[in-house]
Length: 337
Image (cartoon, rainbow, N blue to C red; front, side, top):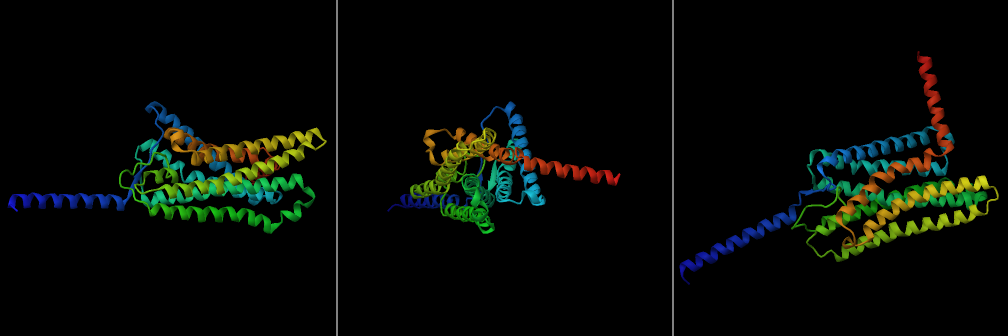
């Protein structure tokens, strides 16, 4: 073989090995990803930032207030407010893991997120999402027992039952999130690290993998069914039984009050569960990626802000507790003067 041909072959082999090395490094390092904000004109970015910041502050303030009130007010030490306190803590974690990064990206336009930060965000987000589904189910069961079998409420909703109905959602959420994080670590990302979402969303990250993700996507769909759709259907069944019991109430005033409460609760349940389930169960081909971002913004920013308003601040007991705290604080200020 002529020396010129050998040189060309040797050169081609070296170039192929170098390209393969670069390819393997890109596939295995995965040191950082790039998130994406909503595609809006530059003139609307400050408006979006102000709106999301307002939602974030109101959500944190409202849910922290509910947690403090339930903890400090003996009259609110009941199963319903025990579940509300869990929901409030979950909502604070929910928004704190997604919205601060969203706000930072909107201002700085730096969309980078390192792999550990991405995995941590995904872990907390998935834990809170699953916990919220199951906590809403626990709250629906509590209301079912209170309205449909009121004489047995104290015996059914005892201390052990309340602890179980509040701890199981957190445990299931944490275990499910850990499984999904481990699952993501087994995937390869060779072509793109650009996440077309404003947080590390499991479904979006899986779609970036160069591996065959058919089984993984099927697993995510099954999770959505068992941890999302099944609790949602259970909640609807509970409220159907509640409404049928309310219809049999003779007092029109009590019936109207119960209907008002149930309709508010159902609005939040349908808004959160419907949007989040559709985001994970409907194929991406049926809606655009920008629609995914809008849907995600609704159930990560809007719903957590409405939860304390609908479940607590419209309640006379909570308003009475707030009034008591304000009067106590005012008396303390007057004595200091």
